[in-house]
Image (cartoon, one colour):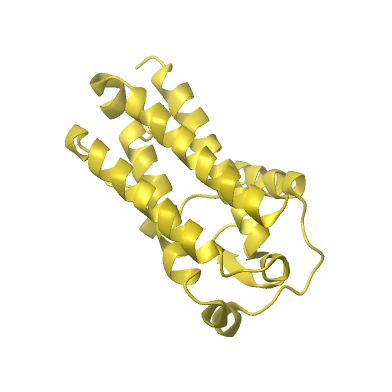
Length: 175
């Protein structure tokens, strides 16, 4: 996937997720099935996961100094999805800093606006990266370890869809 198509897919998947969450009734937004996150918490989690990208992508030099370059063959999109799914099946959980608090109904618009602004910032920073940068520079992922920026964005696009599907499933789960 080219650089321009990837950032478009990343943003589109997040906007699709956000639009879905915003289409929910107030009751569905705050509903949480037993031991599951509410739709509001899903929204906050997705937002918390993309916020660090605004800082990381602000400087290629920072990424290279802090995390380096990839030292393994590049993973395909399909391989990333399989690795992520397996990590979750094997007990992988979101690190504490990405775990949402209880999200009140009043935070829906605030979180949506914050997510949209974050996507704009990420898109702006994205322009400074070349195709080669996307395939060589590394960002750490808490479950999958070091990933190229392209791999990371493949995963993060899928991550938004994953949480939208979880939300749909949870809302349809009887209490």
